[in-house]
Image (cartoon, rainbow, N blue to C red; front, side, top):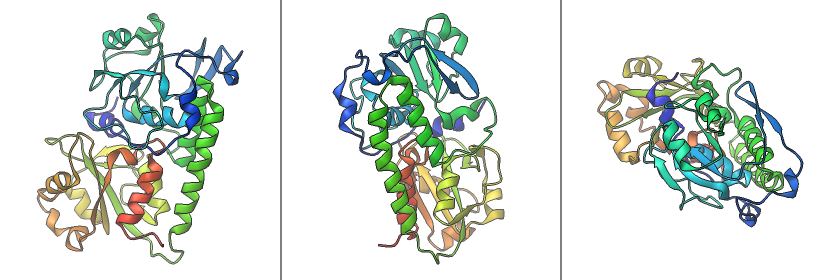
Length: 329
């Protein structure tokens, strides 16, 4: 099981514009795309999960689930939310579930999940409940692909291809593949455009992505298994924590000083803090002033939600490129 910083880092997230098809059906409608497709068996973090009938209502845990479902064309089925830890809903959602009740700002219990009245859960995993407890209540739990490392090491790093595949998986579950295909076409085109904007002769440098779980927590960083590592790589940076076989890891100023990256990206907004507040927290670390990135004014901020395993990572990629000047006009 992961530490608290791991839970939150994907709980605060953001997305881009989706397609109008998502809003054309009501949560109870069975779309023609899914007619006769059940029972449906999908991979759920390495385990086969059978869904007996098309889910009509959803409880989300964390905002990455909201962003993924919106891209898949199914966010109109969200009736309850949890696990957002005070973070804002992602920007640019086609169907933002603003009317969905927040049943718990942190990790929901079995009682709260059951009380929400949803017939399926989509999120970063369970910490105050279990799959067996939910199954006994007739509720299915789907863990988003980029969060499978909560209980076991990922076999493969999460990259953009994995995020897009997760959108397709959810669209299969909810019978919204046409909507998802349209949105994925847009996302793939944007990603290709961003990659082509990086100057071919740009010098490869080092970088680190760091963040704080809360105002009182210690420093954490993004390792080699998460989307932040893929973003740095595509932007022309070597992640100084890239050899760490994890998405998140506890870090400290000593390891950062030893690596002394050229650029430091602070993932902020995970508990509602601004970049200025997160940066001030970071600069208060003993020895932080000695870092080359600090001396050379190479400390930049990117919304933590845009460095998560969902479609908002495309926006995070753009933000990293713009903040570090690695994008040609």
